[in-house]
Image (cartoon, rainbow, N blue to C red):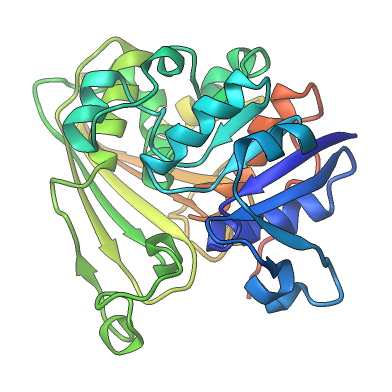
Length: 335
């Protein structure tokens, strides 16, 4: 058994980590922490009553290192890098769910804040298993991808050799309210989101540079990506619709099937996908259609599972030499 810690257990991603790790046959939850501590897990998440009872501690890196071999950090950016820096120095492996290690230094500091752990930034492996599986098996630090970049990159990368770089890519994205976090805001208040949909941070969302950077690093090409996210009145689930022009006519479904032929968590459909079919799972569902040289790509994920917690556990499985699908959910919440 590998002892693991969850730091930042009070939010939605923390709850999803708990739900997966409770059933894991090789990970033992040995330490749970929040910024305050002093409560039990069921105080934070009443749904776990009579399922999993344990004390929640005030987060402390030295205490974590005494109890755990690997830590999941479900913390905000900036707060996360401070903990990761301490834990790595103490020999604890880290899966970071924040943005702190996802980007190159200049890109990160332009869109977030000054970076406080430049030494470890170069060692972080971006946690998309379909693209970085072998590197994930050897690293001590995983930068878990953002939810929108997960859905976008898995949909777009197979077509990178065929996309005409002279024209922009447009991504129209939609996410359930859980992606905005547990704390209620004016946008996530029931009366604001019920029977409503609206864009937020159009062309300025922090996931846009993440998508652009990873496309460049994997394809060797720089694409002009225009990204517009929307909030929809759903608890969970996320969909992206990508529009681009091709240099040549291709069979998009054939390309997708070949690219992902050995991937158990990517499903290719011959009709547009929906968010309900993959809600509650680690699947990314993808559809694509071409008309002449116009290409439409459509993908969906569970924003707090494939877009956060279940993908984090897949990465931890790889880091520890376990089967990557150990304890990972396959069955959706439909209906």
